[in-house]
Amino acid sequence: MADTASIDEVLRNAERSMARSVEVFTKETDTIRTGRANPAMLDALRVDYYGTPTPLNQLATVGAPEPRLLVITPWDRKMMPVIEKEILKSDLGLTPNNDGQVIRLAIPPMTQERRKEMVKRLNKFQEEAHIAIRNVRRDGVEALRKLEREKQISEDDLRRAQERLQKITDAQIAAADAVSSRKEKELMEV
Figure: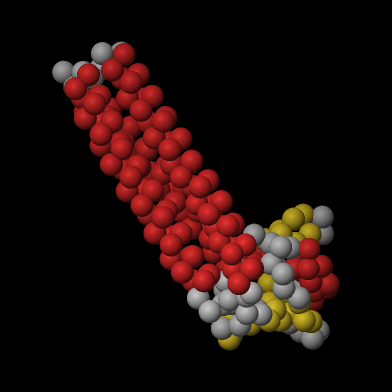
């Protein structure tokens, strides 16, 4: 007698973990700079706030009033030089412009070389997402095999469950690929 509740639970957990991997990948792609201003580009930036590395969006308001301009308005004006220093140290390739009230980041048009560099970075993130999804699949297969070894499910149930798990995996990899192709199209837009 097959324990379909156990199989469904393994598949549900695997799908949830894979979806989280795609979510993380999507957030990582938001940090990749395109020719357009996007406040999410600064999400990975950590600023030393009195000895504690703090996300920039917890220290300032970040907005994009124009397609090629980001405006950072720190809540504590004393943090402006620290924020500027972190922006210069980051791999964004942007130069901050401070007027005493706000920090402006002009987003220059990207060169073809820089675009290709960003696509390589995107592909690295995509491969990491694929690996994470495949690792979840491997863990799911192992959990299903354990159920079979413990005689909770039959060999046929194991085979069918593995096929369902593979379909879930394919769907999540396709979702990651869709995110990647959308971002790559955005990157190569002139």
